[in-house]
Amino acid sequence: MISIYDYFDYRKYLQDIYQERKSANSLFSYRYIGGKVGFSSAGFFTKILQGKTNISMKSAIAFARLFKMTKQETHYFEVLVQFNQAVTHEAKKYFFEQLISMKQTGGKNLVPEQYELFSTWYYVVIRDLLNFYPFYGDFKELASMVIPAIKESEAKKAIAVLEKLGLITKNPDGCYEQTDAVISTGEAWKSVAIEQFQIAMADLAGRTIRTTPKEQRDISTCTLSISSKSLEAISERAKQFRKEVLEIARADNFADRIYHLNIHLFPVSQSHRGDRQ
Image 1: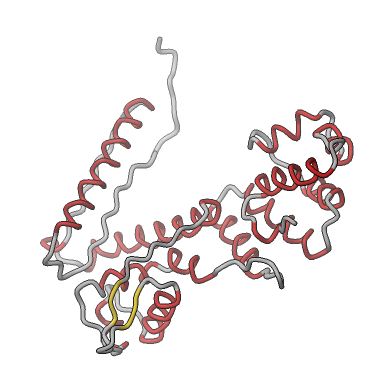
Image 2: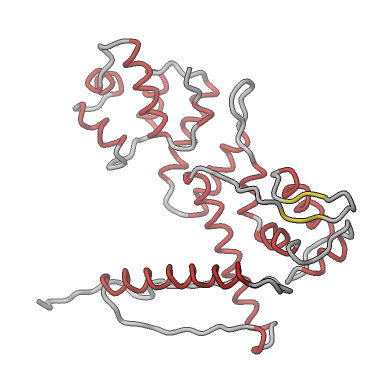
């Protein structure tokens, strides 16, 4: 039986539960769903699954009735719809954190530690720090190694989360180090955490201009007048540059400090093509 608590994408859930019902009853069709939910045509359901149109809260409740969801499942589905259809980062984060808080006995629980890994910027920094910094449990010193410095309690929480996720381990001599473990996650929720991480790092970059000597940083800006075609070309170059930077870092056997590289390319005007041919 399909459980809605295993999903972060309501369209994927609707697709899977439709297939489940269809396999049990050949009469269960798109047309049947459209009639029950109140759509004017069977094609409307197809557009929903393809992401070409959204659904209202009224339709969400109708879907919940059609698939005989419990009250708790209906609430999860409503929040799931709002999460998937949210436009701003703040709204996505708000609805996703509601989803995290909803756990179902017997179902697959969401893993808030994986979300924290990306949404709390210094967790990633501390994990990389352990690549060269010998940490034996002095959380006060570990916290002071991060720029800007974090609290001792935050460093302790970071180590606990990283250890629980299997991203670090304690050696027999008591020293913590990285593991080769990789976190694999679904894009639907990962994007929220990554956006949160990017916002935090962009804020840190602004602070660095005021607090870090020029010889320890490299920050420059340029304003460009370009077309959408040039935007694609520049974005591709930036992607290639990031790959080259990662290769340089991987080949460096003498790392002694953590750096974060931000590459920002964003519009500062509205688009205007005018009457040009």
